[in-house]
Length: 341
Image (tube, rainbow, N blue to C red):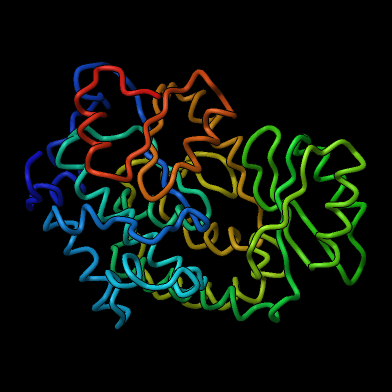
């Protein structure tokens, strides 16, 4: 594989892209998807940082903007430091964009759609040229900070409910909520995996009730921020003020949004949807199904981990999947006419 070059930026702007999305060697319509919080790991993006100048430049730019050593944060720091929400969010964004910059030198055709899971939606907006990386990395740092500060430590919780449909989980949440203690579906991840979020005691009630309704497991998640719940409305209000200072540009590729699970092709709704995203559920199942309706045959997960790849397989086993988090993953994908797992 060749080293990084300025050609990547041209491709990011829509230049040198085939008008009909093609994977090298085959007429496959494909989409890029980007992971969110929970996919972070020590060492993410390191091989790209060491091997490709364009990738290294992304880490340096993030460091300059946030006044921290992003390479150290991603490669060397204790997991406890990386897992702080205000660190995790810019770190995942940085690693994902560094990988994307390298991919665009090898897969020189444009995806038909983009999507990101929660935080990953910001990565998708950078990939679609709606927002500059420098603005995105600053915003997601603040997003994490606002989320952490919105709820007192220990007051919120999240849990993954396995083995029940999203509809049943929604009913369980409704029955488990009170006026002063609420729980809601936060992520509709797959047909039988829904994450719930809210006040700790309500999440515990819902988890117990879900087990009585036939859930295979109800797993408390190691997080203190009840993401995608009404408890995040104070954070959303603060985020809205920051988003108002950013000029979003026209997308060069439509994004399937978390809030609506519909294609977003105009920039005028981006700020509204990013604000709502903080306290609304991630409709991932519907997002993947919508891509399938649009003729998507292959979904490529770009960034640390394989979480989204696994979810796509559970949603629709007929969609081919590719996960790219290491340079060798690109070589395997580009070298195959049918890039699938």
